[in-house]
Image (cartoon, rainbow, N blue to C red; front, side, top):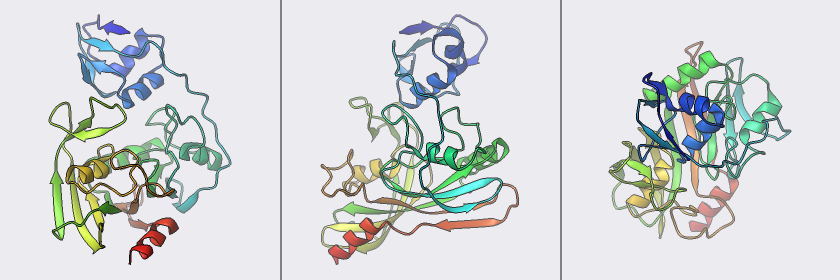
Length: 295
């Protein structure tokens, strides 16, 4: 459907569409996240404000999400207090419900564990301040209230929260370190993919450091200066060394295990006590086993 903005009042696009279509604001946010909403022909964000005469296109139908509920799913909690939870997410688990993954997510598991989660990120993403992909394992930080959520979100924005990943890349990197500074946007030919592009993109910077070289692989540490969707995976493909087993950006997966990308650590100041916090997750057994086979 196509909606022409008919008000002179500048208003967030998610609020305007929530007020002027049959969809709720939460559904609009989900559609925007999935790249299904276009503002004057371009992708947009929920925070973008529309103006008189703007043209917004969105699906005529959208699969309705079920009521979010807690599930009895075991999760590995590295730390928890009244304000935050730090979890070690396994590969294969989706962080929050969305199209194609409406239950059995980390959010469902968190709701089964506690009723105290922030509401800042919408109905279907309680507690979620940042995300890692379904097939990426490792450390994830959860907010238990809105005050803490806002502080942590600002920490990710101003880069005071440090994230370190470990990835196994195809091929042998020639240099010990590399910085990839290349903007990322959604692939116009495939809505499920992101790509390096100058069109409708955002700046993205990834720093790589070689940990170990194998015959046809390189184990690297990756540090994010920005946090774009699929950033490490897209940048790895861009330099010709995709993450091994990546189902989207490399050849068909060669092992049953998910992509060899692991969120190794998070370092930050506690949002309330200001204590320095550091959490690290060990590589999954499948990851370590494969590295041993490469020796």
